Structure formats: C-alpha cells, structure tokens
Length: 333
Image (tube, rainbow, N blue to C red; front, side, top):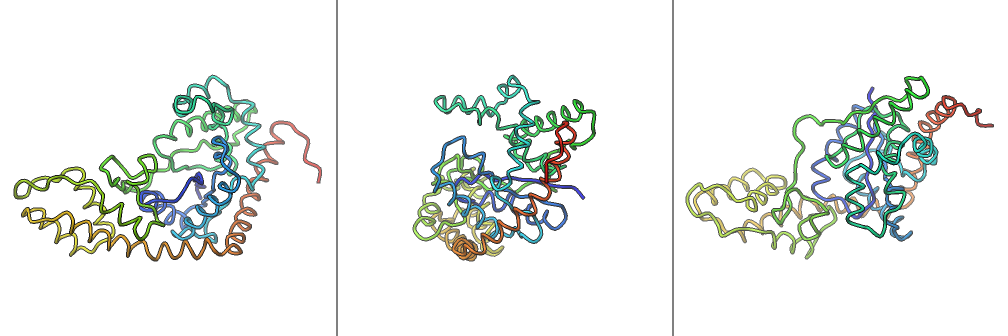
C-alpha cells in the first residue's frame, strides 16, 4: 500500500479553498492509503512566531482538520515538533545537501526578496526539512501544489543521493500525488484567481466565518454592471459568484439565478443575499463542530497522543535503519 504524507503550516484558519480542494481528497484518501497528516510547526519558526500564538494555531488547525472529516483512527495525524526523529533526520540530510542547490530554489529567492532582514538558515534549509518530513515515513506519494514541486524534486534528489552514497536502495523516490480528476478551485471573492490567504482576508471565506464577518465579505464581493444582452457571457467576477453558489445552494436556486442572468432580470443584491444565506447554512454545522472540538482539550490531547505514538513508531524504525546505514553504533537501550 502506498504511503502518502501531507503537511499543513499552522497559519490562521482553513478556508473554502482548503475544504473543497485538498481536504475533500484527503478524507477520501485516508480510507485507501497509509496516510500521514502533520501540522508543520517547525516550519513556522522561520517567521519567529509568538509562543502562545504558535500553540493556539496548532490547536486551531487540528480542530479544523478533525471537524472537516479527517479521522485519527484511519490516518496518522500528528504535530511535527512532537516527533523528535524529524530533527535527527533533518541533520543527516543537511550533511548531504549542498548550499548552492538550496540557494537556487525559487521559494528561497522569493523569501529573500520579500524579507531581506530575515534571511535565516531555516529558510535556506526549508527543502531539507521538507525532505526529512517525507522520507521519515518513506512516503511514496506527496500531494503538493505548484509552489512545492521544486522542493519535492529536491527530496527525490536527496533520497537518490543518500542511496547512491551508501550503496543502498533504502529511500523510495516520492512522486507528486495527482488526485483523480481536476481539483475543485474555489474562486476569490474579488475575482483575483483562486481563494487564498495571500489575496487578503476580505476575499477569503474561512470555515469559522459567521455573522457580520461573513455578511460583509459576501455582500462586498466584486460584481459588474450587469448583463448587457440576452444570454451574454458572464464576467470573471460573476462567474465566481455562481461557482460559489453551486457549491452551497440547491440546483433549483442555481437555475433560478442562471435564468435571471440569461434574460437580464438578475439583481446582484438578491444573488448575494441568497449566497449569504446558503453559505451560512453550509458552514454552520462545520463551525459548531470546530468550536466543540477546539474547546475539548482532553480530546485534542488524546488525538495528539495517538498520532504521536503512531508517527514515532514509524520514525524510530526509519532512524534506526538510517543510523545503521550511515555507520553509527546501535543506540544503547
């Protein structure tokens, strides 16, 4: 059975793009593969977060993962920093990774450009830490976006280099996991591509949004001057609103507004009000579940304990074998 690994940095809340995109597929995957889902809190240290914020963000992301449908009984869900073997493998892999190849990565160059006063070693060796995350469980498939494909290729290079240096066929060469069919791309409320935190809070609907926060986002969504003739094509902004409507509204509701747009009788205010009502109804049970899980510290502690134990069993086996391959004496019991 293939082993699949995916990580999520604990930065803020999950949004509709996360939910209908990767998360929906992760929920399916946990039934068919050996899955590891981890919260990448080590990676957060490159931005020097406040300790209390870091801890709370981990609880938030974990609560939202579980509320969305990830099952701790089916998959291994853990916090990166609670598996110390990550750091040890990270060190070993750094010894066979070269500064030049790290400096050439697009992500590092972009980080240097964006934050010239915080070019720390963690940013430089981010790809090596990512490789340690993946190779620790000898993952064979990794769901990654376009921005991480270069890092995955580096992981393959590092794994291949380790195998070649020590004359073994130990680490598999992981490949990008391609979900069946096209991933659902949730549009931004401002018409600027897909929904993403990088496009700003106002254009992004989070799973926890409610009340006036949700209302303000939906009602201020970008529109146009309206259809100029019968059956005229929709602008990107209006197509985006209809895309969101199709996710949370009934077929009859969608048809009603499609017909109204086609005959030029549509009122965007009515469309937004309907989208707001249906979006709120869709999010309400998810919000309640998130609140319930987040407030149940005992349950979260149990999930983390179970996930940590499962992750460490896998990690310890890998580290024992890696140490032996490198030539270290067995760890004293």
